[in-house]
Length: 283
Image (cartoon, rainbow, N blue to C red; front, side):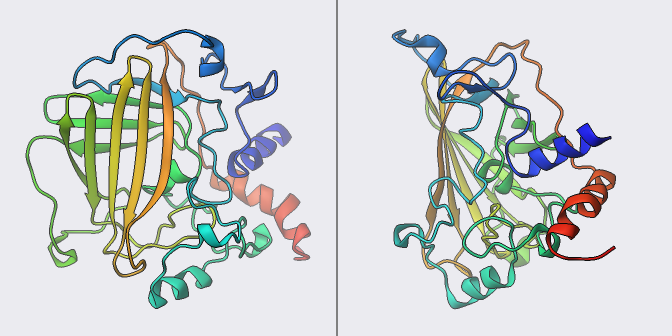
């Protein structure tokens, strides 16, 4: 049980299930990275194909962003200050994350994710993005994520997103997504209809029910896929902002994606053994 609790802590401190070798050589067991192929030139990209098993290209920790969205971490630097509206800033200050400039002890957080509420999209890629598998069908693109073994469907059959929040039949943890090919090597998607109880990242950045998320997947060569995430939420931010630009590397189709699950029983035990004592909370 003790090993299980340590594994749980690592998962939520964004350091679990990876191994360190040489300097910069941090990997998931069985994965390959750019540092394994120094000096090799990849083959040309296939047309209209982003399918496969993908892992952050630099190393296994490249997609792990404990202090907030990769491009805009919550580190107090002026260049990383998000363009909040007054309503958005109030929502941010109401959140009590365990990372970033407004962090609190983990026992005092109101982060919904450690309680095993769905982290939702885009947090699944802005917080703890690891291995993913992309499957293409004539009707949709399906993305399977390692963390909490979740998936998303991006419809490619020509349907349209709702234009207004009032047209959304029900808010969703993962949003409602449609996509299309921009050119032979670039797939773009847009998502809308989000449940506003989720956070954007580990630092407690908020979003409203009006948020739209734009994704781009550019196949730069046979072995690489560049993923870009842009947040557009006119209620909480005065302009769209880029949250993530991450290069992914193609893995073997036989790659075994590890299991990382949120367990309420392990959360309770972690709180009892570590979080509550650290915050001075008596049993």
